[in-house]
Amino acid sequence: MSKISMNPNNDYCPQTLFLYGTYDENGNPDFGLFCWLSYIWDGELGVMCCMGGDKLTKRNIERDKVFSANLVTEELLAVADYLGCVSGKNPDKMKIDLDIGKGEVLNVPILNKSPVSYELEVTDFISKHDGKVMLCKIRNVLQDESLSSDETVEQKLARIAPIRTTAKTYLSYDGKALGMWGEPMKTIKK
Ligand SMILES: Cc1cc2nc3c(=O)[nH]c(=O)nc-3n(C[C@H](O)[C@H](O)[C@H](O)COP(=O)(O)O)c2cc1C
Image (cartoon, rainbow, N blue to C red; front, side, top):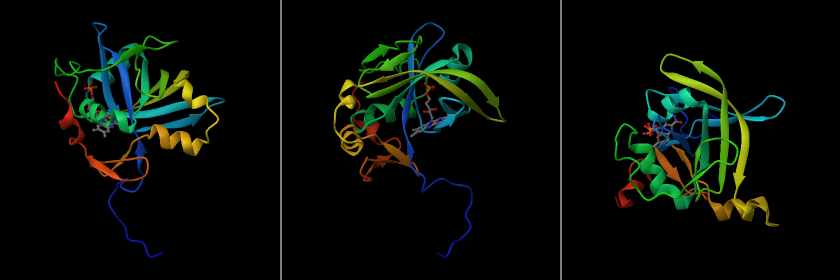
């Protein structure tokens, strides 16, 4: 294989998408879209994630130290794109049709239509220049009971169809382009 050097990028490293749920300082739920999430091991499975800039999700997590991470599926793509492209500083952001529930263990809002919701508690904040890395304990995983069926993992994944993203493009579970960031949200009715 002949290789060429490039500037930093992650164009060929697709990432799974999650909607992070938090409560604002008045107790109102807010959701934002995030892809910089992965896993850590420290005697048990944990989560690490990174947030850049100033955003409502980040402020809420810094204050409460808890949030939910809800897996984004093809069914949720339009709403996920909207929640990732509209800032929580817009007072009308959450005035859309969303089926919001509550965590079982932590005081976090969850999305009932997501098949997998993590309830996360931040144990470590690592502040950099503009970004913040957060290490989290998984306090609970709320999972659609149909994922406990006898199907293979291949069948279950194909059925729930998690979305991945890279190069500002959304990809279906079987790798088809589903639009650039900012496109799927155009179907949302407000
Ligand atoms: C596909 C996609 C992935 C994103 N991933 C991240 C991420 O991993 N980290 C981050 O800080 N912002 C990320 N964002 C930006 C936030 O979703 C965006 O700032 C959003 O408006 C935050 O909502 P809030 O203001 O309600 O917190 C992403 C946006 C999109 C469209």
